[in-house]
Length: 246
Image (cartoon, rainbow, N blue to C red):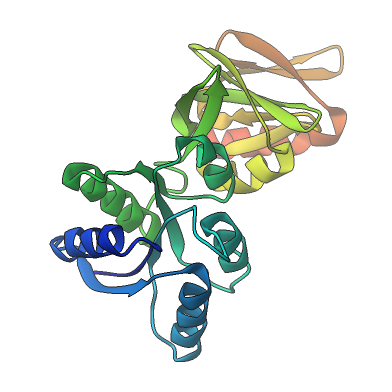
């Protein structure tokens, strides 16, 4: 069962969130904090006392230490709790997921939507959870936010300070580094084939050797593998597909 901390400077919203969380059979304990500084102090005290903290349900707009700044500090803990943002501000979704949030809920919080967030938190904290199984990347599209699931991505290309995600439905530009995405998705089977390209091994249908060059077919695209990464890519793909590629 999960032990969580709820943080919100608006007392009615905090009480409602804590009440809903306590109705969920998967939640063992709910503690609350009315501002970011108090939440940080409580977390430090809990960790220092050896208490388990699985997740933090965190508002964003708070006086003093806001939710995003608190999340960055929490990310520096040796074993940080997972984060679920609960906010009225949908424009912060990209920043939240860059901080590897498990979920992003908009106020007013609906009970069924909160239950889904708890399910994701439970999956993310379970030792048996498949890495990246629920991970999504938020993409800003002219005032709208589209959530691109990791499982839909064929490959990713570095574009300066951005990464372009390629899927069967099109491509999407997000502000993050390819190195950060590689760290985030490496355990989900994403492998580097070039300094500027990361591919999903499960979407690779062919590994080709021609004239000393190596390429892979991913979805409908053929991508070049750099000489530096050729051996590693082949070995990883062979392990991934258990001899399908030879």
